[in-house]
Image (tube, rainbow, N blue to C red; front, side):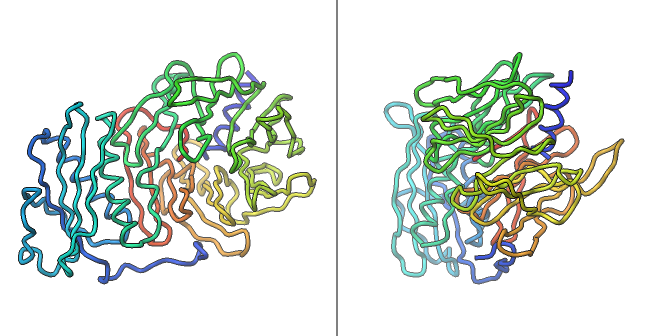
Length: 418
């Protein structure tokens, strides 16, 4: 019972340009985009979903004014420039199945001002259920051609744990909109997935049986390998850039601390030694330091510690219940509980701080917003949004002060990574 209580308390905390200053105001100077659907032989449901995904990706990129009209055309037709007078770009696409019954997307993008074709490309997927990524890749390439800021998050895989029944949770891979979802681990209580590499070919996760066990799964090889097990709790919260070292939260003696596990040597190095709760470690400053959550002040908040040193430094001075942090460079995003309702729902908001200044920026206004994760661009944050008995993925574009929500139709999200 004590082990289970410790696991539940620690899991709750885990849930639970200067980007703090720079916000690009929305102006009318954004280039305008119209879309033409030239599909003739793919079922309407997928086709309409793909059109909506194109519109959504353009809006989330925050670089365009998007016309939501679904215009129709033949793919080989000349462009009707008079129809789109005053617009800047035209995206024309068609979906079709090839000879192997695989779904393809052919896209052509026109600069309507110069009358030139700036992108022609064909995209193919091996699994037709992944049609959402056809849209994501096209809009990513569109942004690349125009030289806009990186929007790699559009085509990144999201991995999350989803509660399906009491003491049952699956590991699911999806796109950021949750349009595509594939269960990759089923059966039992499977929690805290963490990508093992930037290519998203492998991931770690914790399975709870008699004791927590950390596994490494190779998606493409279809293999699973046991890495380590521990009493109390075991969570992989971060992976070094070269993939050889893991930051683990472990409680071999009932008290959770942060450890570094070297995958090459098998060496386990204890990093924190506080006789309380230290969890959710993340590498910062070229992996010389870690950011982590601790109850050293009598309540959970965020601290920093140089690896090998005994000294710790408080990072966050706002709030009295701060948890579930994520880092990018010198920035920390964290979830803070802002109400103390013992008999009803509490409010958790996300905040962004810089480790090099004392400025703080609130990112959400209300509700339950937990488990934030930075994208590889450092300008986009994914997090879990809970409402009632449901949950979904929230997305924040920091530089543009925009946010979006993608609800999960079945189940409740426990933790995420991307």
